[in-house]
Length: 125
Image 1 (tube, one colour):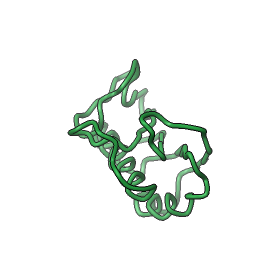
Image 2: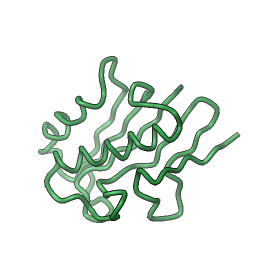
Image 3: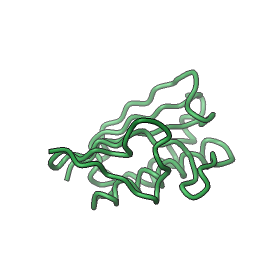
Image 4: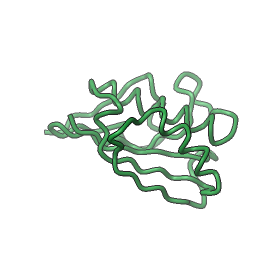
């Protein structure tokens, strides 16, 4: 009982994957990077600007399944520089309110298209 979730309000998949898959009441969202959904270009700026775009993209995918950020139970954040964690976290806490979802933050050597931040979420209705 899988359902593909797709929206033009978030960047189209750049490979063989779906923006999200819904299974019953659970939504598994692919990682979002800071691509402008209209132009497909990487958002310019630092971690703050990129995290805003990433979370706007995540929000669009959630809305496509009639959900919002309060339904997120798990988030995974990938960053190329954990030294910028505080910048990412300052933006993150504007989108997620208590009780916060469980979260992992991982430093990686690189992200697609030169992004500095990628976030994936799991949400439950």
